[in-house]
Image (cartoon, rainbow, N blue to C red):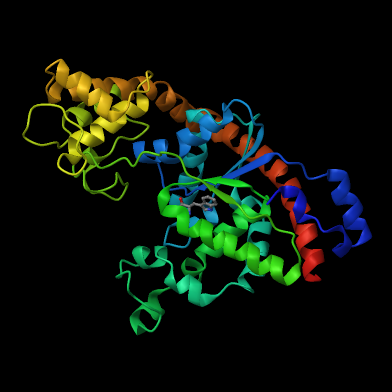
Length: 372
Ligand code: TRP
């Protein structure tokens, strides 16, 4: 649906109508995405979200509005101390800036700075089905219970908090508040995007066609696997710090971790994700950072034609990561240290100011439509 169609002038009061027409909703793409503040990002976070957001700034052709949020309200759906949350929010903001998010081209803000996220969530919640939410997977994986678990389970009912259960409603509000047309997310978020579209149709069929249905922007995004157990995604919760590369790692640390990556005992290069997950993970990383944009298969063919062993592969991967991450570590540490993080706060304030304008537009329409 085009953003234009969200306004049904006849159903809005004259004041809101005039003002909405003056603002005139254009056909620009509006891209929204959110990242949870989980501490210093690792390579998986960098490739899956941060770097992708940066690249959207440079996409030729279509002009898009880019709106990126550090979703701190989502972070409290799981226990987290105020001190840790405070630090993690800042670190998330610093990592986005260090990686190249440009506040002149993107709107960057903390979710909690815009109370309308919670307000819209409430309005959406009044139409959201608990049956639908109970079938979603994230609350089950956060509680570490089987995916077949239902709300009939007494233990689950007592440990499942309303906030975690309604996490997808808040996520839908994040997106719909900015009338986002496209949402870049990883595959694990598909279900949440489907639910957001469900919220749009619930709202629009009740109150008129006011909200925009967002499209999932999937990309051949790379799933970065643990360097110690290539069957698992790279994760901050893995006990071994050898399993992940952090954006704060020095070139020496990156090199040590890559050279120590678990592969297998065959000392030749081939791309075979099922049989050789460790080697394949390294080849995908090399391909991701490869300026010649060769596929993992092509890289494997080239390396094996040179009779290269796994040491050579690892050395190339290490060099490509170090080159790609160059400068990020320094900028990140500087942003956090300089002026007590003053620049980060300044960017977040400015971003919130811009986000607020757009949120106000949507909420005027939504409140009017609902009769508030
Ligand atoms: N749930 C997302 C994640 O864990 C984060 C998120 C919250 C988000 N709100 C969003 C992503 C809105 C895209 C759009 O990665």
